[in-house]
Image 1 (tube, each protein chain N blue to C red):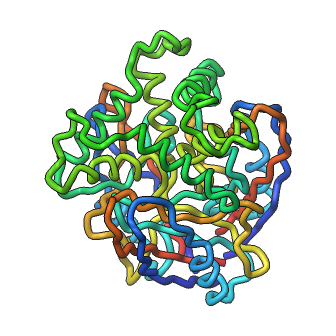
Image 2 (cartoon, chains in turn brown, orange, red):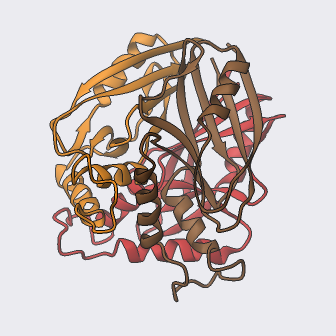
Image 3 (cartoon, rainbow over the protein chains, first blue to last red):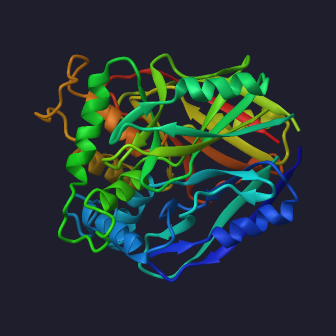
Length: 138
Length: 138
Length: 138
């Protein structure tokens, strides 16, 4: 049994889902671990993780737009508005999705479903550099 | 330390929660691992996982019906409709619940709460065979 | 590689988020594990976990109030009402947030982001003693 761990600095282009499957797969490959799990952890509270279909981009666009409608900006109930109109909706969207995911590893590869990709979901309007920790154990 | 891993093929009966606690517990037993964690991973983007009360089925029915009301079919905003009216709501419901769960193992058993069960949540209308990967580490 | 596991009994003060970062960090310290992961598991279906900003408490209050508005009590659709008006909304809020989280450990410490805290989110109105299992592996 061994542990491989890296902190990835990933550049987002602003609000939306950004596929990071290749970056996570690279860490699994670097780890040399054959069987186990890759845990992915987002070090932020205004972006998050989601496993989503990576074939037809219209599915991701519909998902993103639906969540934007569920959590609109400028909700008059919000008190935490100093960091911008997109800040409080970002925290809520993060809480409704995921901060950590644990993906199985078999034969040295991520054991994802055929249509599954790992996505970093930027909830702020502006582009950001985000840090994601990958820990492979096996 | 050792790793035990299996891919379970589970048949759903269409939309709704299907308890899979016994199937996961069987893998923990087969692993021979005394103390550690069992990670559960759903290889799909139109079904998901949830830990839920397994005593009174009315609690699960209310949860399912609430989510159906939150994410109705035939939303005129959806563009991704080629795979059926239940496809895009399925992706959204998956994103709002869980793709991976990590359950502790102690004395060779899942360390669940008294009323907790592990459920595979089918979001499509039709019955499907779904694949869930169980990795026990300890 | 080794495994450290504890069941923490945590007292909530009723509905709301309760920071438990220090309690989880203490287990990491007790484990003596330098590099790996700390998995956190909530043994209940009417409270949950979330990683959230721990600087400005107004962000947490806005998040809590938003979820209260999304899942109001006394929804006439609910059939599962015997355990009180706050019971079914609690299960739904649990399903929309998290039961398990996996946080990386590096140099003997939780590898959290600058503003991230680990919170136990009590969804019932009354104070409860809740059990959270921490398993550190590395």
